[in-house]
Picture 1 (spheres, rainbow, N blue to C red):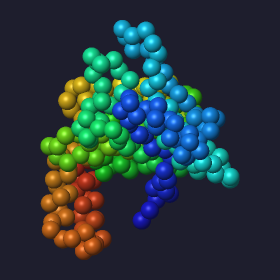
Picture 2 (picture 1 turned 120 degrees about the horizontal axis):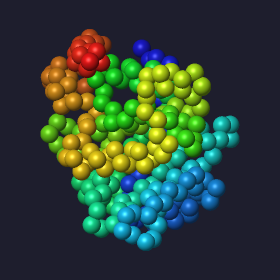
Picture 3 (picture 1 turned 135 degrees about the vertical axis):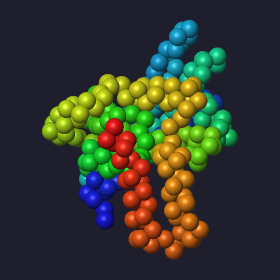
Picture 4 (picture 1 turned 120 degrees about the vertical axis):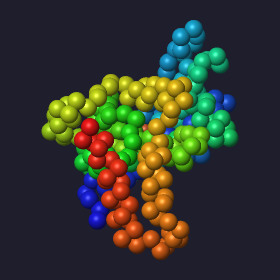
Length: 250
Ligand SMILES: [Fe+2]
């Protein structure tokens, strides 16, 4: 049964491209997709240590407009290039290389009307997150990032989910503060650094633990997907809840 907090709609997507593709992507978005200058909602720049010139790390473009609720119902794509100097590690560069180069869809952000409830629901089922719930200072937005959609023992895919809630009410913010959620003012850089640390450390968090994956896989057995019924799913749900219970308690 779908809960209200599971009414997930696409909020934005993040697109990684090689540096050679970055400006070309900008031009293609402007000309092919009709993105106007005011639809480029941000452009984050940074001077890396040891470099003189500022580099663009990411820009976000709003594609099209929705008449009723501008900003909420148009597709937003955040484009990211590996802007680090050649000698410096870059998880964006690593992901692009792992995935064959050129470009890669990194995360899709799904918007929920109640992020706190959705997040709790996910934790109960053993979903891994790489950040606590973050509050964006510039935008009226709270967000949390999942682990990567990777098979046990395989190279990290660089594909994950973000879950967001826009315009959270002050009560929600207070509840989050009470739970010592982690607030950062620059969430793009916060996520960026978190991913960088994971890739540098060689331990990239998966969406669910390998052990949980294997339990689910074996519970589903060799039935084809169209034969899976509610009893199969409730068995899987129980084992996910059992798996996560000690983690939540601890
Ligand atoms: Fe995002």
